[in-house]
Amino acid sequence: GAVVSQHPSRVICKSGTSVKIECRSLDFQATTMFWYRQFPKQSLMLMATSNEGSKATYEQGVEKDKFLINHASLTLSTLTVTSAHPEDSSFYICSAVPTSGFSYEQYFGPGTRLTVT
Amino acid sequence: DAKTTQPPSMDCAEGRAANLPCNHSTISGNEYVYWYRQIHSQGPQYIIHGLKNNETNEMASLIITEDRKSSTLILPHATLRDTAVYYCIVRGSSNTGKLIFGQGTTLQVKP
Image 1 (spheres, each protein chain N blue to C red):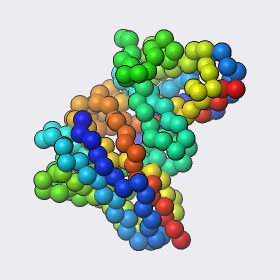
Image 2 (image 1 turned 120 degrees about the vertical axis):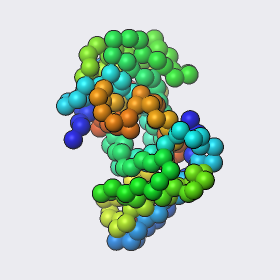
Image 3 (image 1 turned 135 degrees about the horizontal axis):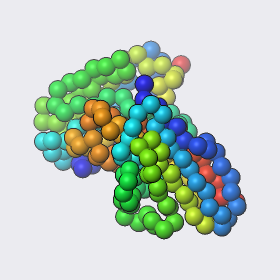
């Protein structure tokens, strides 16, 4: 079956530093990937749509200069949290849509837990 | 995309059927009903989806009312591993369509 991986699974960083999270589709190509954020006991909140070879589309209220998204290949999208602060501590989840496949298919990664101290 | 309403929580006895309701009264004609679930601290997992006919797969059944304003996800024989948050999402047919998650239903399967 289709597998999406995220790296790292957990990361702790100091306030003011930047953190990069990778999302990879392991056995399929994905022109479109999505990034979500989830705070404790809350639902997933869509942050942005990542499109291979073009700029990401951010949801309202999400700062594009703080959450940098790069989708440089059909199997890799990265999310960089710049100048992280404790309020950025969250569970970040990506999903990938197979370029060739059924319209309903969307596969989620296992998530990355970011803690900013 | 249409908004959905789900009960915040439900309990189910192990081995019994779990019936999870979802209201989507503003659904439009080309929108599908999707169900995902999220086990604690994991990424969401696709369960099933449908347009207007009832659907069944190895995980669950989806019953959609004739007016399409509500649906029910049925887990026929719930196990402890089915304890999770279940999300009902309405989405258009495009394969680049966003999934907008509501609050979902926390299903607790009890022994």
